[in-house]
Image (cartoon, rainbow, N blue to C red):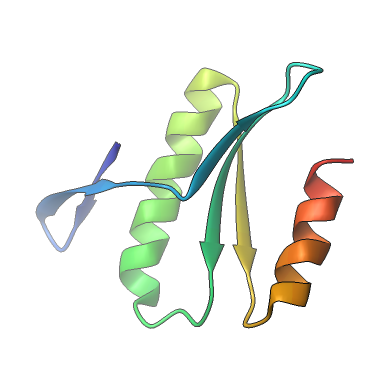
Length: 79
């Protein structure tokens, strides 16, 4: 988990997926549909980006309402 602060309270963020590619690239992936808590998610994503930077991992946020947008974004990441 990735610790983060939101409105003065400590929380833990559990990203959706972690991938290690055969070529050594590493990705932490969050898939979001409709964002109903944008301020809280911004705090989570900020903490995730910082944690990833320290570990040489790329943080990828995939957002959209449809499976098609997810697949399009995923295919761009793995190329």
